[in-house]
Image (cartoon, rainbow, N blue to C red; front, side, top):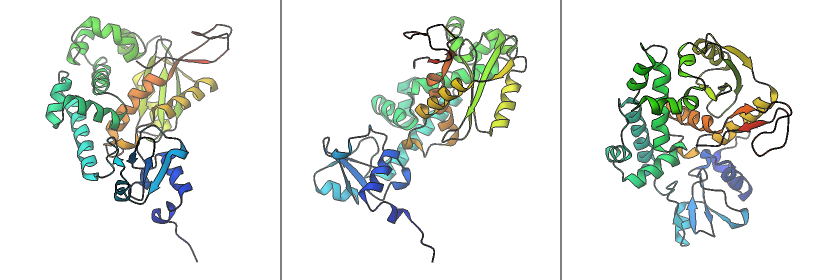
Length: 312
């Protein structure tokens, strides 16, 4: 006889419940909630709040049971109100759509007002669902537009101003972070540029990370590895593409784990989760490998050790 393990039977002991909380397993949501006794707050298993010590955690079958003992609901994951959670996810997705389609960058106040939240609440909500701030998403949308426009526009200035940059100076100051090379080289398909790349696995599928000696020039998702490499070759047809060494590939694997999307945002459209993931990857991926015998910032000489660019 075949025994089928269902979620209802899987989360009946404290050991499996604690593992679900540690993994922030969204499949456990609705089957139990947990309380952090030092804060008096109960949460969903998938809540992205900082993990508490095991000895400070209690489990309850339902939020009602936790509430009956005087505990209060988490304001981040809203364990009592799945409808409010869905409404919040919809508001964040709507805000991302406004940002993606707006010809000029909307203000935070304008975004919050359009989706029905106060400025402060919207900012906190957006970051909880996406892992980045509205400003970071807006900057990424503008960067994506200029990357798309550079090869197609009549001049670099045309691409810059049509993408929402207020001045050429602002764009050129941010160009290494946005392009990983000079605008002229990017426009010319990476002409004269060496690009290292590696493909890593993530919860959103394969991700290809490509870097130059100036910074990250590509974070590609949405396809399998060979298709991602073909996209990279198409983007930088004049560049020299070099597979990354083991040290760099290992460092990118670490960066992927750090940049994984919040479980709270699992209801967001996949394109939004991938866009936010790419922003976090650009902040966490190492962009420089220290040459043999040369120290990195604050380090002794360690050949081939990746130096991570700190988050903005």
